[in-house]
Image (cartoon, rainbow, N blue to C red; front, top):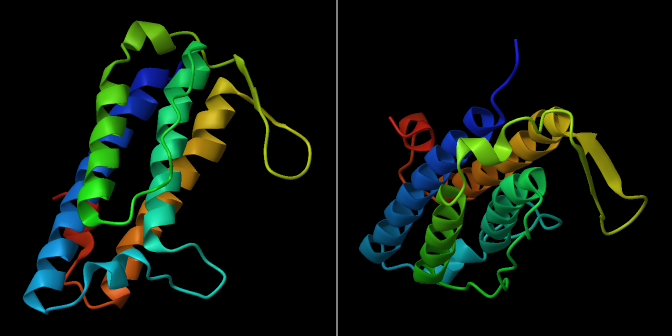
Length: 168
C-alpha cells in the first residue's frame, strides 16, 4: 500500500495548528481571568534547559511549513522568530495555515522516495526518504513541540484537558 504524502501531512498539520490556536486562546483568556501578565505564559518553560513556549510554537510551525516545501521542491518560507504576545503567536499560526493550504495533493504525490536533505546546526546534514522524513522527523517533532506548549500551559494552571489537545 502506498502512503498519500498529502494525507499523511497537511490534514494532520492543519488539525494540530487549529487545536494549538484554540489552546492559546484558552491560555490568553485564563491569563486575563486570573490577572496574570500573558508574558508569564509565553516565556514559561518546563525545565531550565528547555525552550520557552513561544520558541516551542515557532519550531512547530517551522517544521510543518518546511515539510511540504521540501517534499515539493519549493522554497521554505522564513518567518522571523520575534513573537512575544498571544496575538503575534496566533498570527504566526495563521500564516502557517495559509501556507499549508496553498499545497495540493498533486504537489506531494510521488514524493515517498524523494531524497530530502537539509542542514542542521551541528553535525552532518540530515538525509531521509520522503516517507522517513514525514514519519520519523516531521510528525514526531511537530507533536513534541505542540505537546510541550500544551504541557507548559497546563503546568501553569491553564484549564486544559486531553480534549483540548485532540480538538474534540
